[in-house]
Length: 224
Image (cartoon, rainbow, N blue to C red; front, top):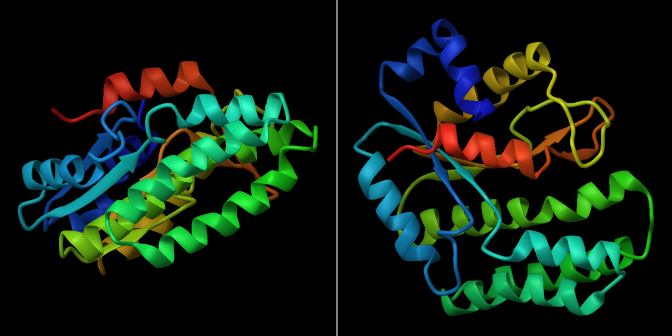
């Protein structure tokens, strides 16, 4: 399921000032986020789901990126990593986000060091960068291309254990965190962009919720 959506629903009384303005949660899957189409896809989603209300966009990695990042880490394959990052860099370049391209180059260099390490938590850290980079890119599209007041939240408050690759969610802690992190943001911005597929441990390390969980969450959370 979509945990961000669930925690908003079960704590509606805490969200009353925001909910009075209207709030919607939309999932943008990776199959939709393909090269050359990000602007049009996000434009369609917000055109459909935003009408003066508050909107939370939960975004996936662009198509093919997660597989490339898995291959990059498992095989210490810099070519796969470069291919994954080039998908975002090319999209940013096509949209005229030149400063973002430079920032993505720095991220690529940072990840090149990580894919040569073997710790299980680092594998999760590398893999979830697809969602993190989508969040970064979509925030720029909303602000710079579509004229929305949007904010990216890279860690929306989903707390998990350290079962790397298939982390389980601590629902009690996560509910409190999501309310705390997103409630204030939704009072200031039209659209909040958050990454799907990931959580964070109590000691601050990113975790992957696993493909099975991600597929289930996508089926039950996407607004059509």
